[in-house]
Image (cartoon, rainbow over all chains, first blue to last red):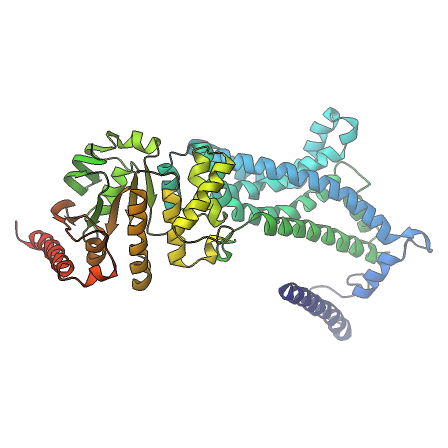
Length: 282
Length: 257
C-alpha cells in the first residue's frame, strides 16, 4: 500500500517535472526568440493548461455543441474496442505461433525470418490492403472495425511470438530432467513447466503489445476512412492544426491515456497471474 | 532381485570417457553413496540409473527392468543439488506435481501432500511459495516431492551440497529417519567423506579420467545412526579408509603409465 502511494507520488512528481520542462522550454525559446530547431509559437507549442482547457471547452468554435472531451472519449472507446479485439487476437496468435516455432526447430528456422520480415513492412502499407481484403467478407457487425482489429493484431503478435519462444526455452535444465524422471509427456512439460516458466517473458511482450495495439488501431482507421475512432479525430484536427492546434494536442492526450490504460490492464493481469520469485519477474 | 544392476557400463561424451567398465549391484534397502573428485562420473552414473542419459555401452536396469522402462513406470524419485522447485507453485502444489502427472485424483493428492509435509516436518508451509523458504527447507520439499509417489528407489545428486554444515547434518539425520520409515533404497552422490560414511551402508569410491569404481567400502556402523555416531572411533576409521581410497585413486592417476 505504501509502495503504491510512493509510486503515485513519483508519477505526479515526474509529470510535474515534464510539465515544467515543456513550459520552461516554451518560455525560454519565446523570450530569446531562438529559431532552432523550430520557432516556438502558441501554435507550435500551446500552453499545457490551455490543452487541458480545450478538452473541457465545446469542440466547435463559437461555444456550441458537446465538449471536446466527450467527443474524444467516445472516439477513444471506439478505438479501444478495435484495439482490444486486435490485442486479444494478436496475443493468442502470437502465443500459438511461439509455441509451434519453439517446439519444431525446423519450423523455427524456416519461418522466423519471415515473421521478422513481416514486421519490417510499414503498417501504413499493410493497413489499406487488409481493409480491401477483409471488408467485403466481414459480417455487418464487424464491418470496417473488424479489419482494423486485424491490423492491430498484426502489430501485437510479433513481440508475443518472439518472447514466447524465448520464454519456453528458458525452463531450467534440471526442471526438464525432473519432468523426464516423472516420464511426463510433451503436453505436460509444455503446460506444467514451459508455459509457466515463459509467463514473465510473455507478459513483458504483452506490455509492449498493449500500447502497440492502440497505435495499430489508430493507424488502421486511417485507410479504412473510419470516422468514429481516434484516427478520424487525428485526421480531422491535423487538417485544422494551424487554426486550432489544441484540438490535435488534446486528441494526443486522450490517445496516450488509452495506451496507458491498456498497459495498466496488462500490468494488473501480470500481478494476478505471474507467481514467481521476485528475482525471476522480468 | 537387485534394485539397481549396472553391467559393464561405459559412457563417452565425444572424446572424453566419463565412465569406463562400471559394474555395480544395489540390493533393496541399501543406502549407497557414490563419492569421488569432480569429473569421476558419479553424477553421470546416477543419471544413467535414472535414464536421464543413456550409456554408450553396457546396460543399466532398475527393479529388473531396463532403466528406460523403470523411468516410464516411475520407479524412482530424484533430488538434485538445487531443490528445483517450481516457484509459480506453492510448496504443497510442488509436492503434488508428480501425483498430478500420475493422474491421482484431487482428494488422494491432498491427503498425500499432507502426509509428506508431516514426514519432512514442514506442516503449515503448504501455501508458501518456494522463495519464502530457506535453502534447507526447500531441499526438504524436494525430498518430499521425490518420495510423494512412494518410489522404491531414491536418487540423490549432492542434495545437501549447497547447504551450510549445520543444516546439512540436521538434514542427514532427517534423511536417515525418512529412509528407515519409507524402506526405500537410496543412491546418494556426494563430495563429503563424512557425510558418505555417516549415511551409507556402502560407499562406492570413484576415481576420474576415465571415471571408474576404485573401491567399495562396507560401512558396518550400527543402525540406526545417531548424532553420537559421528564421534565413534569406528566412524573415524571408516572416514580414514574412504579418504585413503580416494587418494589412492588420485595417485594411480598421476603415476606414469
